[in-house]
Image (cartoon, helix red, strand yellow):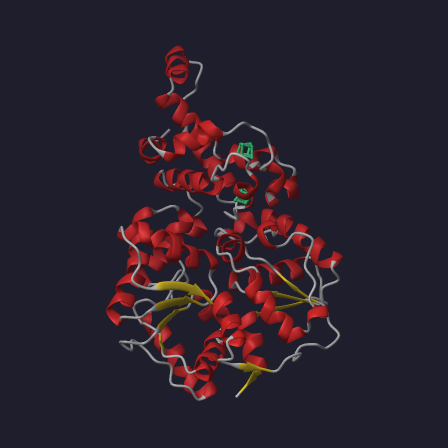
Length: 421
Ligand code: SF4
Ligand code: SF4
C-alpha cells in the first residue's frame, strides 16, 4: 500500500474506525440495503467489502494476529493495483446513501468508513479523473463546473429582468444567507428566480454572498479533508461576516449535510447560525401562513410521488415537511409513497459524485432501475424531489430507459408556481 494511503488509514484506524471495524458481525444485512449490490449482484459491491481495504490495513498494522501473519508472509501487502480496484468500488459503486448504516444492527457507520477509504485512495492519486478535475475547479474557481464569481454575479443580476427582483448580495445583517450550487447555475437557473419570488413574498430578509456562493463540497465527495475544510470555511466566514441567523441550502444534499453536521467539528464549536434546507423552510412558510399558495394547484388527475433523497431526508430528517406541502399543492389523495420511503428510501443511484464519473454510468443506471421499478409500481406521473442532483439523475435514468411519461419536478418550482401574491 502506498505510504500516503496508509497514513490516511492509520490516522483513522487509531480511533473510531478501528472500533467500528471490530464491531462487525458479518451478518450481511447491509448488503440487502445497498442499491448497487442489489442491482448488479456483484459481491464486490457489498457495503462491508467496500471497507475491506481499511480492515486489512488495520489488521496488518494493529492486531497481533495481523502482525504475525504479515511477518510470516500470509498477509500480502496491499498494492497500487488493488488501490486502483478499490477506487472502482468505493467511488463508482457507492453513493454514500447511508442505507447500509441505517440497517446495521451494530450501528456501524459504513459510509463514514467508505469516506476514509475514498480519502486513502485519493491520497494515493487514484480517485476518478472526473472527480479530480471537479475538485480542482472548485478549489480554483469556486465551483466544480468552473463557474467563476462573474458567472454568479451575472446570474444574480438576471433576476431583475426575469422576475423584477433585485437579488440582495452581501447584505450585512440579513436574516438568511442563501447558498446555491453550481448545478443550479448550469442546469436550473430558474431556481434563483423562483426562490427569490418566494422569499420576497414571505417578507424575509435574505442575502446571497459572492464568497459563499456554492454549497457543493468536492472535498467531502473526493475525500480531501483540506479542501473540504477550505470550502466549508468560505461559507462559515461569509455567514459570520454578514451576521446572518440562518444559512439556507437550496438543494444540494451532501452540501447541506457537510455544513450542518461537519462544519461544527471543523470550527470546533457550535455554529453561530442555523443551517436549514428548503425542504424544511418552504413547508414551514406555507404552514405558518407567511406565504399563500393555491391549494390543489397541481391536482390535475396525475399521481405524484416524493423521492426521499438520502442526504436531505434520511440524514437530514426532512421526511414529512415536503410531503405536507405537496399534500396541499397536489391534493392528499394524489400523493402516493413509493414502496421504499422515508428512512428506508431507495437512492436514485446518482449521489456521492457518481454523476461526475463517466465510468460509473452502468452502475448508476442499474441502481436507477430499482427506483424506476418503484415509480412504476406506484404508477407515478410526476416524481418530486428537493435535491437538484437527484432530479438530474432521475431525468438521466428516465431518458436512458426511454420512459417518456414520468415528469420530474422540484419543490421550489412547484411552490413558486402556486404562489398567490
Ligand atoms: S450490517 Fe453491520 S454488522 Fe452486519 S455485515 Fe453489515 S456492517 Fe457488519
Ligand atoms: S452508503 Fe449506500 S451505496 Fe454506499 S455501500 Fe452503503 S448502501 Fe451501498
